[in-house]
Length: 186
Ligand SMILES: [Zn+2]
Image (cartoon, rainbow, N blue to C red; front, side, top):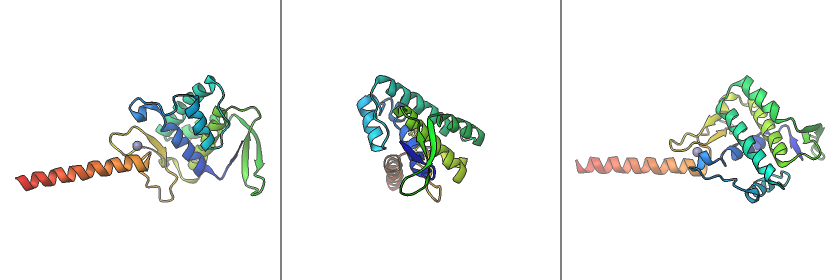
């Protein structure tokens, strides 16, 4: 597997997706509970197929590590932590076809190694190109998710915009309606 070094937007998106599968984000429900769910997560992102229970445990450990990095947006800490995630690099190369800089995982690397490399490249790319203020907690008051904002203006507020953004809109709408009703009654 190869990761294009200029594709940090995709890579950081994978890191965000990974941290937001954690049970703490879903009121105790793990969104990567078994090998089948991990296989689906991996296939969608062209990662090696998980084959054993150890793969799942390794990805769960990686998820905690990546979340800890997103939660502590200090430049030196992010660089050190993300660099450690890239230990499965085999070679620096150019992508065939587009000749973009890329790194490949060393032969025999498992799904957690490849995913770690993707997260490492994503975090380093965002630190370099966008800055550490792009590592944020979800803005929805009831959500414990976190994300790396790779949008151009950098004003993303929610870990899962479709879900958390909608929840906040619905809650605001209800609150407005309630205060309006209260106003009408008094
Ligand atoms: Zn959220």
